Length: 192
Ligand code: IMP
Image (tube, rainbow, N blue to C red; front, side, top):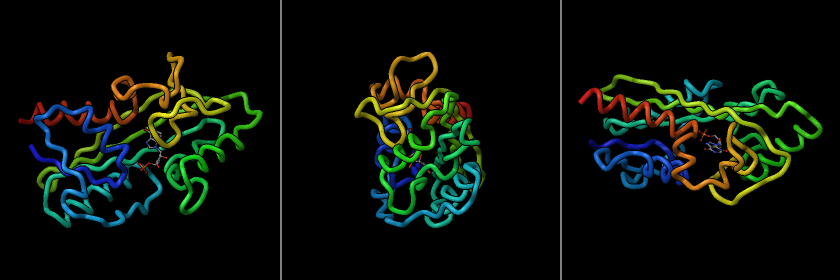
């Protein structure tokens, strides 16, 4: 089955292609020559995932999915949450965002946080949502060079490594996005 993944994020594309079987043909936006800046105008990740997926579905009339992800830090009342991408401002880098988190968390003992992903899948104009969550903690400095985003400062509960220190297979097995993708794949398999 062909499914467009409505993202411009090459890291997400790499992760998701690595976690689905070859029965699902993930098509990137560049493969359909779509260079649009996909709108994300809401303040929940559920609504943003939906908005991104419907934007592509309505434009191309092809089955597709989108994900939206937030890092929710308890001591910061759930920040950066839905604002994870541009937490440090317009055009900020992953490192700018990490530095902002580390500054805000300076001296704070409660380091509990989670990544939460919602995937919105549109099949024949009907939407299905799948959530994946992973609990962990925010470290006080960066570890590892893999992954992307906040991976170097997030260590999932029960592991000695940050997401940025893990290989892609390990991250996909336990991560927010990996778990949401597993639900999506199970759904597709049970509806064949
Ligand atoms: P998006 O709105 O779903 O594209 O994600 C928002 C931001 O969350 C991204 O720009 C990254 O900074 C961060 N993010 C999303 N997924 C991950 C991940 O798997 N690891 C680390 N950071 C992530």
